[in-house]
Image (cartoon, rainbow, N blue to C red; front, side, top):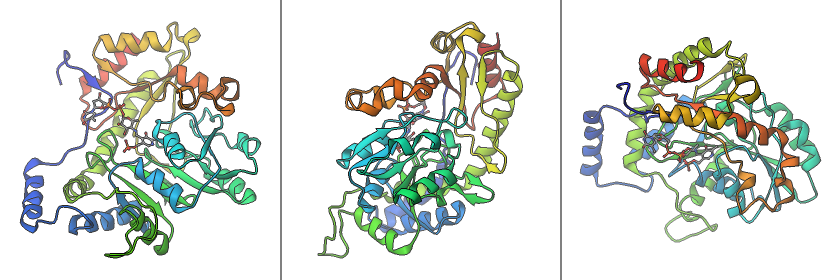
Length: 370
Ligand code: T4K
């Protein structure tokens, strides 16, 4: 990438085109292009092994598993969630006819703050939907303790947490279910795609029905399911990308090391360090700009970077709770969400992907330090 080209926040991991073409030939020859074909089965089993989760179901994107998880767990009434996420998290709650209840976030991991969950629980609350934001694990132990005390389901939006482990155990094993996104902008991608991780074979069977219109056989429909099956072409892409993902994560790790070294002593710039006992995936590199200390607002820095072709992104600004559908909810008021409101005004996710060159990294750093 030359100095005059834009440096994007991310870039999709893509396999060798010839290898992909060979798999496409197999698909063409078999004429099986979707509906639980061979590549779909192979990818499910490969991901189950890689992610250390026994039961995983592939989807067409990372939004439909959120919708399906709520369906499968018969969630109704109110769902406690975070305003600091991609809008799909709250939309999934809304699409299920449930009311999202926003709870403020913990600035140390940008996940929902366990100290603030209990005050948001009402007799209508049936579930909590937290997000492992940027792939940083939520405080799953405390969230589970609250869920157990009040009899609530927990569905983790783990769209950013592919491959993340805590003390050697997959973060996807927490809660009742976890969802993944395999969108092109993610650490691991199938162009569009996603998955739902569940705890037992019976639930996987139900989820598999739900993602296929509710069909439990040729003529039997057991539930009002949706169509969200991954097709063979994306599954084949996924199989090839799985072979590359470890190296890609290590390259991201090296970028994170460079950013941290260069930015550690820049006044007014905060970022996350690795958490002890956690295997991170370096899916995003958010920095938080304290305007007073840094001498420039987040937006001033964001647009300066943009002018120089450094295309960071303000994930997640604006807060979901400020969008027209949700802003009238009592829990959406900024007074209820002071930390999330501040962080949304401070964040810039720096370019972070496997393809960044040394000179790209230098240019990002120069824009912040210089
Ligand atoms: N939950 C959470 C917590 C999520 O973050 C997301 C998605 C979901 C659920 C839902 O999962 P999906 O249904 O999407 O699988 C992106 C993604 O579309 C979205 O998947 C993601 N989160 C969100 C955080 O970011 P945009 O609109 O910011 O992406 P876009 O198209 O502007 O791409 C960003 C940059 O990436 C581009 O400037 C260049 C580069 N890029 C992008 C694409 C798509 C490429 O180089 N090639 C590409 O093909 O939303």
